[in-house]
Amino acid sequence: MSSLDNAVKMIGNLVVERFDSTGALIEMQEYKNLVVSVGKAHIASRMLGTTQGSMSHMGIGTNATAPAASDTALGTEVGTRATATSTQGTGATANQITYSATFPANNPSTQQTIAEAGIFNASTAGTMLCHTALSPTVTKNPTDSITITWTVTVG
Image (cartoon, rainbow, N blue to C red; front, top):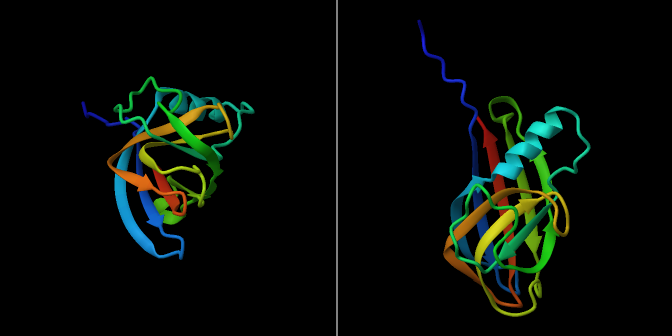
């Protein structure tokens, strides 16, 4: 009798880039993330053809508490969620979705120590797919912009 590994795992990696007011890259960090339980349920329900919205926004926050599978929101969200674009890989990377969003200058409007990020299917509230703790944190000044590129792999 053979043993088959049919476990489907979801893995997320994100890159956070911080730019100054001239557009010069001043910091780049890479992080792993947690695909939360409600995010997995969202994916399963979409397989059944439900009409829940696609993942479309990213949020950032200042809470440094470690993400948990039971999370449904960021601990302390700041600023306005950014609209995310998404693309699906092809060929060997067809099981990957890449999301990208930019938090421009003045979002948020005060200096913040960004310690968490998440992907959602709405500009407010909505269903969370992924939650990550940013360690090391990223300090976002009002004149800075942050671009997050987040790749979720199903494998």
